Length: 329
Image (tube, rainbow, N blue to C red; front, top):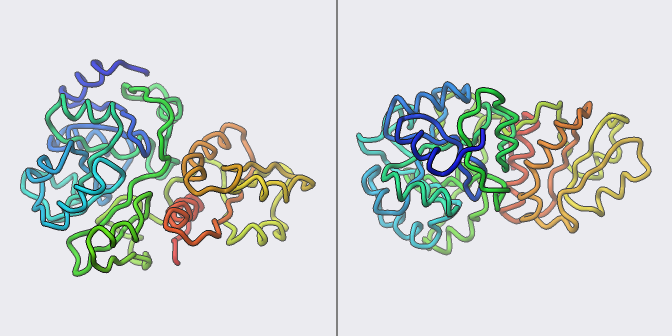
């Protein structure tokens, strides 16, 4: 149910759950250093214990209480926080093992959403806040999507409107020999390299991530998935030539130009951006997948973006996992 800021704050203070908006997606929030509260997140989402949680904090000072913060982390925080960058660091004992999937690391992020920051400031403790959806379902970018997915069991929801970015944060591991991106997002590899003046790795070998625990959320082969059956196409050209597109299907593409290829086809075609701009595509992707579920299509056909920039990589990661396939570059 929709609730006020004060009602959500009181729930969180009482070790209960509340749904809060971030700039990326809506989060199912709980006190991140209170084991009882964290366990409620796993139970409500049906989340595997080996899938760690990110702790959301106000600033780098809060990070010092939770993890062993190094100079690289400070540089990154100065450049990208508050914002959609999660930094993985060696954790301190105050972080419950449930948060870290029993690993010795923890992911930390300082979100930029005003309401979330206000909540952190007034509460005075970190919030674990994975996407507010049942595990492996499409992440929510509106309060209504959250309430529809959880139904009568939905925790209190603070409505902050449509999220501004639409996909989850970049996750950067600083505990490896070379800093490594474990989940691509809006903060690009090039931006991080420019900030740190060093080589950044991008993990593309996900073959060993079918088993838990993971260091980062968002690494399961099937993730972000709608209820409707999805099919992945390597390109718009291959989708056009595919004989598996049927009258009750939806083809979801990046641009209006691509959607126009299907105007004479015996199916429905939606586009995510007038021009195929990656920022607009990212903003609309999860919203359109939720809308598609409402329309009861037989299948959703998703096409990988052809752009080579880092945001297109992040979008393709979400599209591939929504179709239940490992993402390999």
